[in-house]
Amino acid sequence: QVQLVESGGGSVLAGGSLRLSCAASGYIYSWYCMSWFRQAPGKEREGVAVVASDGSTRYADSVKGRFTASKDNAKKTLYLEMNSLKPEDTATYYCAARGRALCSWTFGEYNYWGQGTQVTVSS
Image (cartoon, rainbow, N blue to C red):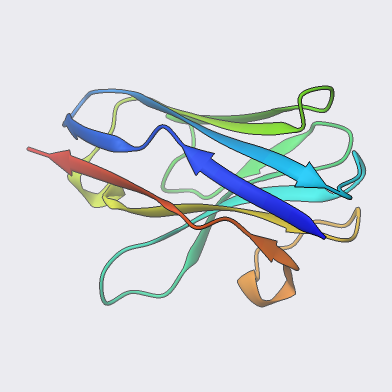
């Protein structure tokens, strides 16, 4: 089994920064695709960033140039550096692992999820 635990959420003013971490444990392999999703109240869960097995990243258009995702395989930890935060970034942020090397933007294709961490950005 795989366990994912997010941390680093909080409340910030618009323009501020936060760094989220996702610590993985259990039988997780470096070739798994790891991703960040978020869900705002009343909205569907949406992909924010995906990190492929080789460390390459892709981002949702809404966060490009502001968010940076990375992973440390030795520490089994996924990160999301969030800068220039906007009120519309307010959501619960989840990390997810897919038991395949091929990444996906579809949340239903991920096998493992963390409990989520709340990010609130006020203007």
